[in-house]
Image 1 (cartoon, rainbow over the protein chains, first blue to last red):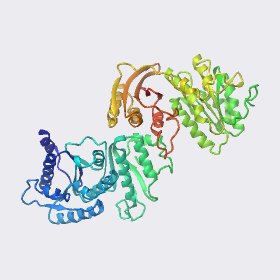
Image 2 (image 1 turned 30 degrees about the horizontal axis):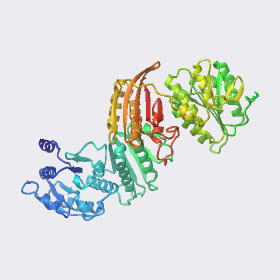
Image 3 (image 1 turned 90 degrees about the horizontal axis):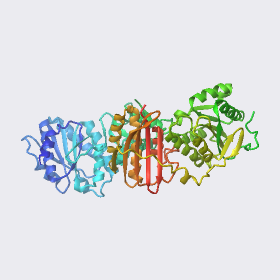
Image 4 (image 1 turned 60 degrees about the vertical axis):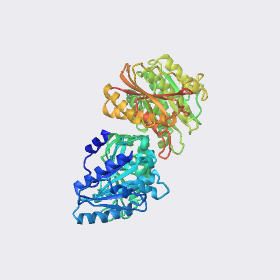
Length: 292
Length: 325
């Protein structure tokens, strides 16, 4: 099928900090795009890793690309859905890779490995995991491609999990509505359109962003070490949000931990007008600070 | 000075008293309204007067210093869509009488110059006030109707929607009052005029809300709706269509057309589905933050110039009107 080649050719090189979602429709697509992804990394001078399931995803992946001689492909394992543990591994490997002269690390994660650790993760767990992982990826300038094989995951769940990846590749990628990701500078970017179709992912993503303020070591902590953390949402790319989405934001803000500030930045004019009409701007109502 | 002089003089209300004031011209308007306001001021009862702007100016002049004790709002703004007025009264009661103290209001939603569609919705609003406040603490709402400027039919029907009528200086129970239970059949089923054959049309279901928003955006742009108001209509249409997906059988039909009105063209956006809305007050009461449902339709009323809801066993039709100014 010609579309595959065109797809691969059209793809821009991935950049450090990219956290990429991918719903894999077929084994053929997996092979083709994995090859592109790893070859792109080899060209850019990334140290390549493949994270796979115990069932042999990593081994399978190692046979994929025709890579330049000097490229190493290292299997990586993780035993739990723990973004912090994974982040530590990435940080260590990034430091080592840079020391060795690479641009950074690039991880192709076959998300089948999640299924090694029952019970099957819920939408909320996955959104939380991917959002935190994405933030670490952005902060350390790594590249992570999360490949979800369509047949192994609930389609509705995985489609919404794509919303918390800053980028998406693959043949099966309709516009997801909204995307939310960390820009690596302690700000969550929210782009696109929040409506009924992705309300659950938006709610889960906000809960993760706000619970960030709970972490005493989290980047949300103020630079002066003050325990009062600030969570920032940047809405400049928000094209639409429905009434349920705005209420979700208000409720998430209302239930946040005391001392945590929630600041909305670069909100479109219509968002600000609607927010006021809903009465959410009133003092003490839900405590979101809206900045132009 | 007091208004309670005639043989039908009202006792002090012990419940919500909803009364039409049938008058002719400015002089009679002032003759009935000024004493009603002064009584409230004298009794230290909070009072909100929602009438068209020229009448606010007239009342301020007539009230002199007492005007400072009165809250005024322009009915042409606050009540442009009559579907917003009930929540404005609720806000007023909550702010001014959280202790249940008596308050008064004057509301003239049916002022001369409204369109036919608007008068129909004013009538519906006047009826629904009785439902909305039938178990609220006592307050007294007087609704002026100018017999010298309005259609006789509009004035006649005010007797059906108001349990009391003030006319020629006398307060009387209204003989035409339909009662609370009659309402659904008589007043809430007023049929809508048919949509034109050339209306833009789209059927939608779960996952199709973006297509709804895109069609509304395109049609609003071609009709010349300013960008802010077009955005408001997109949100309103999205909320109604989302209700179709969630409660209206999972699917619905969107139609859009421009209707010619005396005051200028109006973009009409209609969403219909197979569902039925049980609450005739849907979208008219301000939802609390924790409350789950009803927020979308409340917002729709705030955003649109006019909202028409018709619901029966055959399904639900919601029409949103935006004047193309």
